[in-house]
Picture 1 (tube, rainbow, N blue to C red):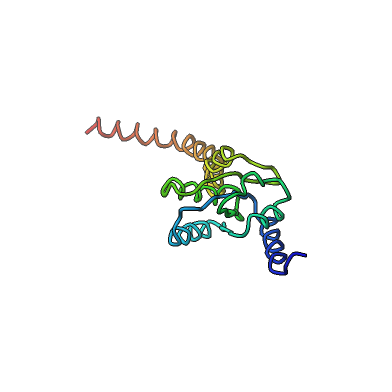
Picture 2: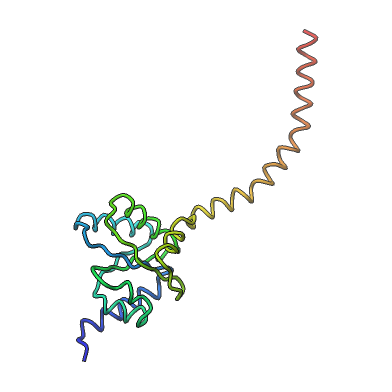
Length: 168
């Protein structure tokens, strides 16, 4: 019979996974405590979390056998709550900076992702970037229309100014 602590850990992890929009399995062996604290702070700043627990408990919470190939060694789950890519961006930025993490696999909407797919996902623009792009695209035609409508008045003023300058 499993002990109470392990059962509560599995329940806690299942709650976190139900809220998460994307998950990455990360081997953190070789990182120092200070680096882990820094990574946790970076993930938290973008609405993510680094969760460490036993591999067997992760396997049970994720769904027996879904990611069991990558659950060997010292692993943690990088969870992204705000949007699918923000925590993954920070995770890969930290990985490039320290070169100590191994991103093994990931999950998004019950689809298992390879390490390469997780990296591709991390390169997508984030939610804020997409909103800014959308706003600029929406404003673009209106801005152009205003310039076209002002152009005839502006050209008339330039023509009158040229005539006035010529007469002087």
